[in-house]
Length: 83
View (spheres, rainbow, N blue to C red):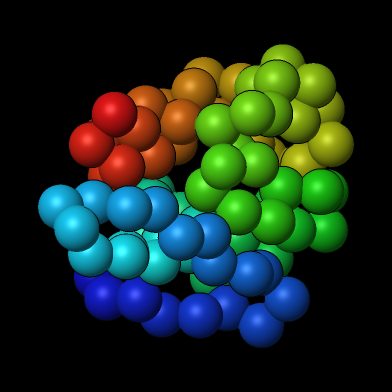
């Protein structure tokens, strides 16, 4: 996946190997544009925001999304960032 933007979902920059890499929520494995929009509607507008969110609390706000799934996205986001 490249650096694809989703309307209403701002990307976040991370420094990696002396290059600036811009990641959007849809760069996280398992998150598509529809899910990214739903996350944004619930206050999660970036990869950093996803990592800082409480899975249990966020799962109650988005229909059909479990805290387990959010935990997986957070793990995928950490992998994406090389953390």
